[in-house]
Length: 336
Image 1 (cartoon, rainbow, N blue to C red):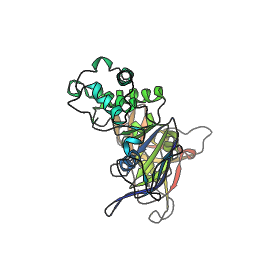
Image 2 (cartoon, rainbow, N blue to C red):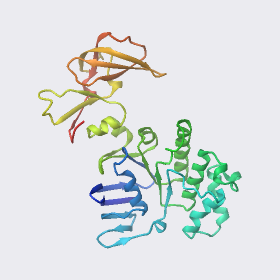
Image 3 (cartoon, helix red, strand yellow):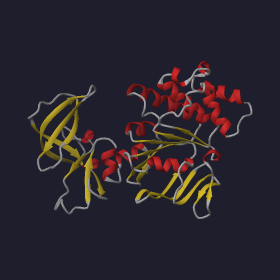
Image 4 (cartoon, one colour):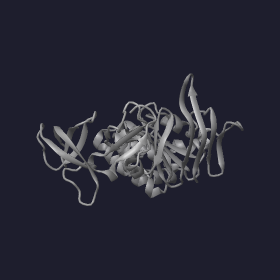
């Protein structure tokens, strides 16, 4: 069942946390709400979960209307049939792993075959042997698995993830990212995931919803968001970007022009129409699989980044080439 959001808004006092928003989360997909802190992504997630009350709009899943401001309909959170994985895991410290997972089932009044259901959920996250341990006896990654098991044990129509990996260290975060996505896929779940981490969003998502200041700027696949950003903020927030000074009066231009570092070439490309730029090499940084080369191009305000297989000494002046097919133009919605 698809999740549909129409005209959803939310204000806190004089602050608008979410401007009128429409969104569809397709059944069986992994959709990510991506944006910086304060962009409205967590507020939107909490309204879907039933933990915040919208000011206006509707929320429905399939033919079931969960919230309708006009009809004064608001289904309580525990009756929406959703699972939720929180940033801080939200495990009860005095309960065993088994009881933490069973808690969600008891809250949803799904107590038939309780032990079998709990153990099946723990087996899926490889924690069945630890059913009688308490949270403080588990590692951070194991606690995260318990939180996930609790969310899926209720056989949810939708699983909501509120930055679930942000409390983990970098290496464990990468490991859990792969593991969590694999579990979501294997169980055939529909997932809505909130993060400010573009790597998480790009590597896990079928669809990404980029947000800023309470508005959705662009929705698309990771490839679409990266290759064809619709807004300068999206281009800067997702990956690295280089910017060209617009022709004419740059102060009054309504257009932003960008390209990605990997598209800048050290030699002209046969069969491709390229623009040539004289640049000075400012710095080469070794990244393991490549060098990141920082450049200053003649006539350009911003420094550029390019990638190279070899270190290029600072101070070198050279010509670089940019295929015109890789240049992206977009309308300015505000300051870059």
